[in-house]
Structures are given as structure tokens and as C-alpha cells.
Image 1 (cartoon, helix red, strand yellow):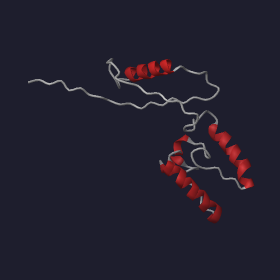
Image 2 (cartoon, one colour):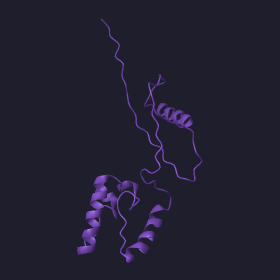
Image 3 (spheres, rainbow, N blue to C red):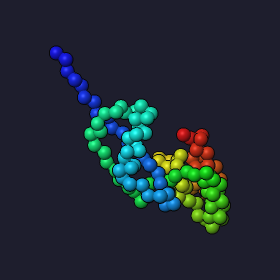
Image 4 (cartoon, rainbow, N blue to C red):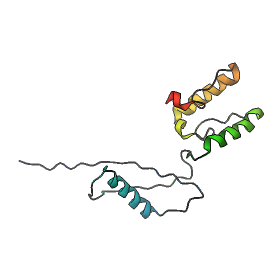
Length: 129
């Protein structure tokens, strides 16, 4: 007896957008994501069972060309005022934006303020990731 095995594969795709980007319709976004998944071989040309789309006003920070320079300038102005902006939306660094990273950024900036111990998570993410 031969039995057909149906597989259901789930994908989660994110698209970042900045306020200056032109809006994109849900239909266009869905079509482009499915086409992209097909073009790189993650899905075959089979029927899609379902999709779900949600637009969030705020999500992860999106890096851009010149971001690190802008952040350095911002921190140089804030820190003399006693403002140490860290965490997902405080540090604004995609590569260290998980909750465990946000916790470590807080811990490390307190150590820096209290004892002069250099920060690693925020200042050198390539060392901790």
C-alpha cells in the first residue's frame, strides 16, 4: 500500500520599512515574499495553504549606511548629560537587539559607570555574537 505524505512547511518572513519608503500593499508583499522563497528554492511551485500578514508600527531597528557613525555622534552628546541609551530601542543596534542582549547592555553600562569596566555587548557585538 502506497501512502502520500503531505508536508506542511511554515516560514516566517519579515520586511523592514522606513517611514520614507513608499507604502506597499499586502497583496504585493505576499506575492513578492512567495516569489522570493520560490526563487531561492525554499518552496516549490505548490499551492500555499495560508498566509498571515501584520504591520507593526515599531519593530527591530533597521541598520542603514552610516548608522554606526550617527549612533556614535548621538551617544557623544547624550552621555555627558548622564543619558546612557541602551536596549532594543535605546541602543538601536540590530545585531544586539534580543532581550538577552538588552539585559546585558543594561548590566554592562552600569558596570562601566560604577567601575569603569568597558562594555562588550553594545560596543563590540562581533565579540559576543
